[in-house]
Length: 89
Length: 155
Figure 1 (cartoon, rainbow over the protein chains, first blue to last red):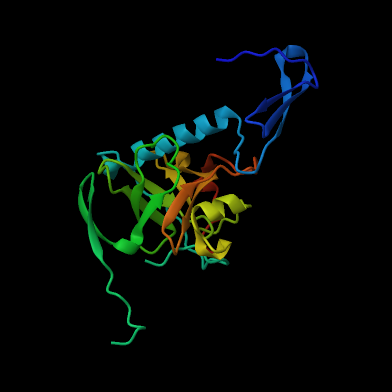
Figure 2 (cartoon, rainbow over the protein chains, first blue to last red; figure 1 turned 60 degrees about the vertical axis):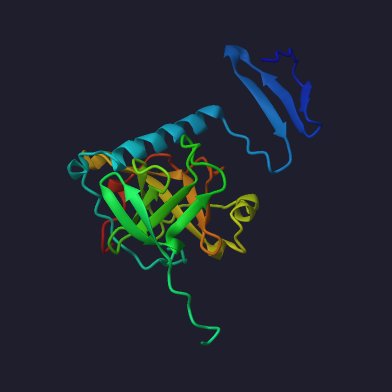
């Protein structure tokens, strides 16, 4: 891992197009960072992605459970969608 | 033969954990970026469960991998889903109207724990059949929306 020390208002640049600025280094260890990057970069807190990954895995095990009979599908009403959202088979 | 005549649907057989299903080629989708946590799988088939807003998404490549999906708008939800133009382009859609939205459902023996992820829906382009799970920037959308909070039928 590359380790760089930065002060407030100092920046880091990646590939000439991603700029990360240290905005605030507060008490309690919290750091506020500002990101400037082209829109194709998707910037997330890592734990959000980990949580979604874990939720996908939970969804898999629940749907593929061999004792699927023990899992009942929720009763969900159908509405005529106000927007076209259903693919037509 | 008229040029307007529809091609007969090509049927494909897909192995599942419990057997085999036959689906139309039009029900296959290809993920342009993988589902988070399932990096090796790209092709799935999506078929509707009975007539409701629930669907099954079965991996074509791995019979053991299947998900339950919800079409949230059809279920009476109206989540504030703003689709990024880059995501529209990634799945080859001409417009937002060409995109079907699904959310991944976590089933549970305890009905109060059955939930769906509205923060990271799966977008499917109806015409190209390309798909992508996106992480929406709207942090008000819950990763765990419990389906027992759904508005009651007939409300």
